[in-house]
Every structure is written in structure tokens, then in C-alpha cells.
Length: 398
Image (tube, rainbow, N blue to C red; front, side):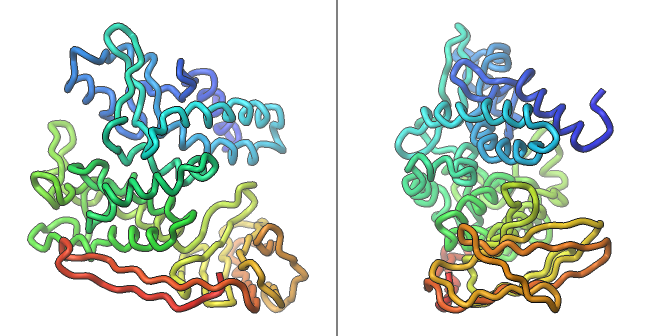
């Protein structure tokens, strides 16, 4: 069986990926009957029945976004299981490494293609190579694939110019497509790597406030909404999709993608991510320069020269918070509750080790002097571009 522990299920999932899903002829993770998109295979086959084969694509097709996502997820899984299963961790790293060069073959100088389908004669057929499809772009940013290949700036320019900048409610999947927060909020995350001002704009544009402002005569998308909303170039902008299977137009609210992906975008814009080794959190604030965030497990109070907060433990244990400090920072001081720690920065982060029992609240603070400063200004279009909101950021240590 699968076993009873979380580790048992992680191990079973890794083996299933390697042994059952596997990679295809082009070296990418197999597509099967869909990746993120339920319809990427069936819809393309229905639209082009003389070109693509459903059965051959299910068996031999390959997914570009799943391969990109694997480059972020799998190294972290390897780190997490290293202590318990070093051989499996080594196997996972070795299996993951060739994915990078395999997916990079489908960079066309502007963006990544979408997937590899199969023709009726079982030949590989690349889709999404002529028109940008957002589904296969954000994970290239999140995983640092684009950064390591030197394509990040070109990719962001293509996404922003063609999809994101013209849209007041977040980037649609295609120029005439829908905005799906399950994908477009991943873009928010991807922007945080090197373009935090675009990440802030993306988060803001995904708010129900801006959706209500842009489409004031449409009742949904104000306090809740469907999984996707038609973009401004769609035949029915602001409305949603219809399906004989899923009653989206009958009940276009209460879809958690709108809500949970806003929370994910908020966490990433605030600089909160899992530490690569799985032992805690990285906290890397960029924009805005000053904020307070209050969540059930973590509270943050960020200001120039200071990152403070409170960790609220649900279980007994220990975690490390990796607090970012800017290049050139001096007089760095770290405190946990009432005790000063002798913690030195490592690779731009101060490791703050916490030990706690369930229900305990542990306060922490890192302060410094100096460091590089950044100034930012962001104009966000609202009301379909008929008005704008200016957001200014003062200089802060960065």
C-alpha cells in the first residue's frame, strides 16, 4: 500500500512520477490527457481532428508547464527527503536535471511553447509556438529557468506587452482569452524575482475591487467569482465561460481559485516563500517598502531597516526564518523574544532559529543600518483604462 505517513505518500508520488508518468521522446514530462488544463488535449483534437490524435497524444504527448514546474518543485522534494531516503533524493535530482535543457528547446526567443501533441501518424506537433499562451510562462520565472538561461527579461517583456499591461484585471491566458487566477497569480509570483513593481501591480489588478470597477454592471467578481473571467478582448468581457458539464454560468461564484490564489499572490508579494531546504521560511520584502501582514501563523511588520514579526506555533517544533538584509547593511541586530542572537548574514539572509511549543507566540526582529535604496512608482489602470491610481514608494533599504 501507500503507507500511513506523509513521507510514505511523498515517496509513492515520486516513484509514480518517475516510473509511471515519466518523460517522452522530447525529454519533457508526459502530458497524458491534460496537465494544468483539463482541455489542452481534447479541445485541440476537437478543433483539429484531422491533425491531432487523441489516443496518441495521451500516450506520447508532453507538457511544457509541468516540466517547468518540476524544475521548482522536485529539487525541494529532494532536499526534504534527503535525510530519510538519500538514494531516492539522489535519483530524483538526477531525473530532474535533464528537464532543464529539454524544456529550453521550446523557447522561441519571445516565449515558451505550450505542449507537444501527436499527429494521427504519431509525429510530434508543437502547439502554442506562434502565439503566447500564459499557461507555459510563469513557472519558467518561478523556477528561475528563464533567469538561468538568460531569457527572463525577454519573457517578461513578451508577457507584459502582449497580455498583462493591456488588461485591467490581470493577465489573460491569450490575447482574446480569459483571466484564470490559478495561472495569472503564478505570474504575480514569477514577477517577484526581478520585477517586484509588476508583481505589486498584478496583485492589485486581481482584486475584486478593480474587477467591480472595471465591470460595474456584472454582479459576480465583486465578493466572489468563477475560476475564470473573460478578458477585455473577449466577445463578452467580464463574463465567464459556459459548459454542459460544469455549471459556471449558472453559479459563477464561490470558486476558491479567486480567493486562495489571491492569498498566494499576497504571500509572495510580501516576500514569503518556503526555504529551499524545507526547514522554515524565507522572508524577502521588496515592494511595498512598508507593510504589516497579520496571518494565523505569521505576523510581519516591515519598514526600512527593520523586519519584525511573530511566529504563532500550531505544534511543538523548530523552524528557521531566513530574513533578507540588503547589500551593504551594517550594525545588524537580531532578537528573539527578549534575547539577542549572534546571527550573521549568510548569502544575504540572517537565519533566525526558533524553538516553540504548540500555542506559543515567538516574537522576532532584525534591524540594520544602511544598504542600497530603491525608489518605485507604479501606475495602475482601472475602469478599463479610463482612470488610474498612482502608488508611490519612498526610498527604503533594499
